Image (cartoon, rainbow, N blue to C red; front, side, top):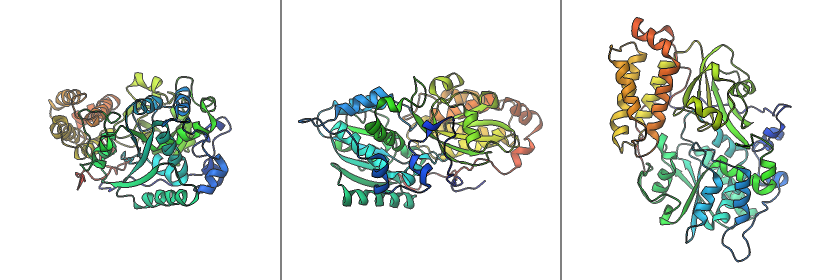
Length: 447
């Protein structure tokens, strides 16, 4: 399929079920009205933020302490404790910088752009509060260059704030070149410093020396929206949803063989099958689900009762990642779907290290041959060996994600591999793809 972009999702006005009222948090205003929130709507629903700098201090320690007590972790993929990030930046000398990562380069994810569309002021509040907490004077909001509508939505929200209640820090919007690795935190810092939007693999770390050589906090848009609610309602309120070890709610983009694809907000700990049911359920039996996005893990349907937590998913080799859940119907070929994704990941690597320049293309080519039934007797062992060589060798984590996807496909679709090696490609391999994959062509520019 020569699709230039993943199919758009139509936002569904789905209120939380009666058994999970705590799910109405980030999207509470959308659930209530079905329309984006203006600044007036936002302040009417949530009121002003509660935390301010301590007298004579450049930082807001109470907010850092509240975020730590809440147990908030990053919602951009890595799941790093948010309070530890705040504390590491606040502890550095000199004025700091805050960067909002709203790039959302995962093709199957829509959560951040949907959140910005319906609740932009929650994201901006969180960014301003984070800036106050670490002693920053500037917030840089990074958006992809090819989403002009999203840029305009956030620009309108920033203008509203400037007219109505100016923020204590500067808010600056930036449109960056869009590729899969351009959303990596060091890619944003590198671009803001005048370089290409490619990952920076070597020290120093961004909290030590980032934008303009200043200590820099980089947080995902959804993470900052949660922070804005913690500032208003406190840690105990935040912990009313989720599990004791992994509290709160999270946004999940559900797509593929599902009745009502869209973005849902669910408490952490919700079983994957419940998330699928909230999206209307599958119209036909499923073969597997891809969890975590293009750098995620294929899971057999036997694991669909697994709770959505890092702790429960880890034994399966999976993690929440960007909050993506793709249902693959039984009528699809998992090997063919994986081959297209790997070809895209190979084309969108930064090509700064051996695993990206050589390893990823080789794995993608082998997988394409396997899916097409062109595999020789040595291909499978070669593919397993190459996949095992990718992790922990790159300048960033991009090769690790591709290796995770490939290895999970070899395990989950083992029966299909026997079919493809012995009898040629299955019938499903020739059918139209179920997962929209952007064109496997390198980015036109990194700057």
